[in-house]
Image 1 (cartoon, rainbow, N blue to C red):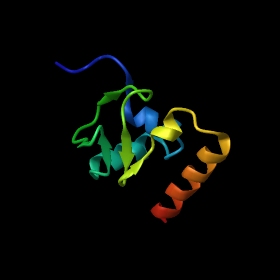
Image 2 (cartoon, rainbow, N blue to C red):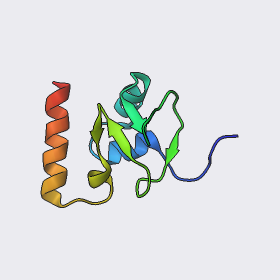
Image 3 (tube, helix red, strand yellow):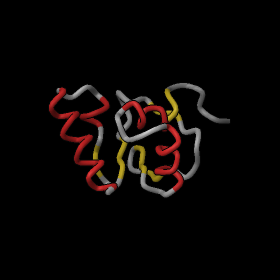
Length: 85
């Protein structure tokens, strides 16, 4: 039985500025996303961005999802996009 509480992971990632929902689904498919230290292996995972530790490419994004300052969010977002090329 799948958890029906929380927000779909790709939606949280997209709202964090990591790209469109579809590009965030690709991050998940590529094995680049972990939730609470466990690699996400399928689409549809639901998370609580206030409680779950979400990592992309090994970076802890909790500060961003929990409402870091605008400067922190801009710096994190631009740093992530630089890594993607």
